[in-house]
Structure formats: structure tokens, C-alpha cells
Image (cartoon, rainbow, N blue to C red):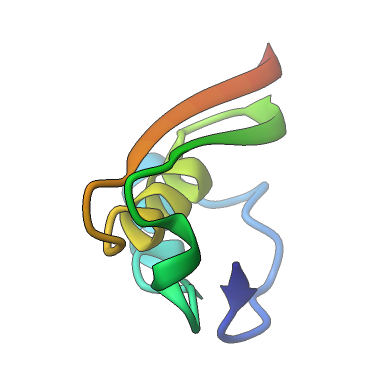
Amino acid sequence: MKRLADTKTQTRKNLYERWQNVDTLFDLSDTTRLEYKHVLLIDDVLTSGSTLEACGKAVLKAEGAKVSFFTLCRA
């Protein structure tokens, strides 16, 4: 997983701005390693879900991949 650009903190952004800020921010350079795999994405705090959603979209570019999410707490 690679972050394509640096972004400012999202703490002061509303829900829509958070989603817009990270929508295409993450990518995988080689999706073949994840083909037909079940990937668990872990985040410390779930606020809007935008970061996990963006990462999940990147993983799902791999053929047959499945994604699950785990967070430690919700803000």
C-alpha cells in the first residue's frame, strides 16, 4: 500500500471533505500478490471510514481479493 501524496490533517474536515481528501490517495503498485487473498486492514481510530474505504478500494483492484476492516476504537 502506498500513499500517493501527503495530505493535511483531517481533524477539522467534515465528513464529505474527509472522503474527498483521501478518495484516490492510496494505491498498490503490484496487485498480483493480493489476487484471491483475504486482506485485513487495521486502523487505530475510525472516524468517517474514509481512509479504510480508500485503502479497501486499492486492494479490490486485485482480482478476486476480499477486504475486511478492524479498528481499535470509533471517534
